[in-house]
Image 1 (cartoon, rainbow, N blue to C red):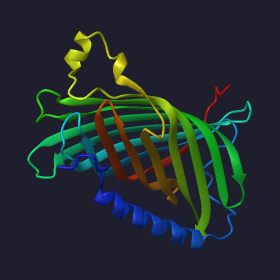
Image 2 (cartoon, rainbow, N blue to C red):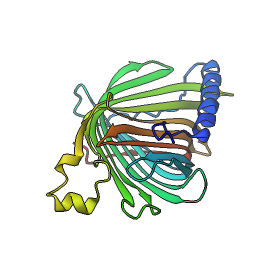
Image 3 (cartoon, rainbow, N blue to C red):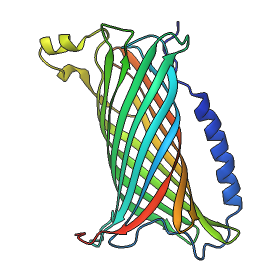
Image 4 (cartoon, rainbow, N blue to C red):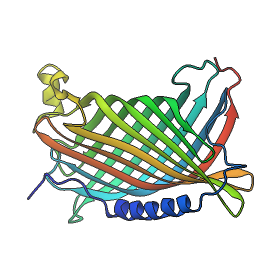
Amino acid sequence: MNNRKTPSCRFSDQVGRILAVVMLSLVCAVTSAQGRLELLPVQNRSVSAFSLGIGSAASLDTYLSPCEYSGAYLACDYDCMSLGSGGGFFPYRHLYLNLGYGFLKNHSGSMNASDVMVHAYGSWSHELVSSGIWESLLGISALGDLGAVMNMANTNNPVNAKFQMSSGATFDNIVHFRVKNRPMAVKGTLYLPLLGVSFAPDHDQFYWNMQAEGGLSGDFHIVTPFNAQTMSAQFALDIPVCGRVVQIGYGMYLMRHRLGGNFSGLWHSYATVGFVHRFERLKWK
């Protein structure tokens, strides 16, 4: 059996094609941005969004099993961007939090696994473009990914902890348009880790054995895009409805590496629905 393939997800392929068609149609429909939907915060204010998502996940972790697992995935996203009064080269502050849980089975359907992940990303961004239609930000980021894949069929190694702490870049874009005089916007955010540290235990090394041999220091590895590829992206369509802003989106997370004598690949792909809020930070410094 070839256990080196990248986890695949038919749901993500379908959503990706639909998203591409929708965004192309929206770009073609762009008109004057007067009265546009403001999604970047003004000074001393924040814009936040909360959404729930459902989709699919896939995992191939040879520390646990040579089989690929896939199944349903549930997610909760919180996204907040703020602009302070201090100015500086990176005035925008962006916080993204994600909690997800996957119900996974191998391809024969005989064994179950679970996938739990938490993502916490903080960014400091500089505005590159600010026109009537397009707004673009580029920033530096601190990114943390923490979770576990649990395969109860393997009694020796039932769990593989997932941990990665990285520094990287964040790229935000907002495109404004109008449909029948209704202001709308498409948002896209890409998080790209560039240098960090990741937990990757050696092949067939049990957790109790790691502790008995004197700790886990040998199981942490330096990661770069060359030996461990990680990426997270979110896209959203924001529509004003009855005085509120409804957000319909798509989220994706990819992690893969060959460290510690094992191959590990994890993919999340999900559609989201939520709301956007604007509020003022009265005690902002």
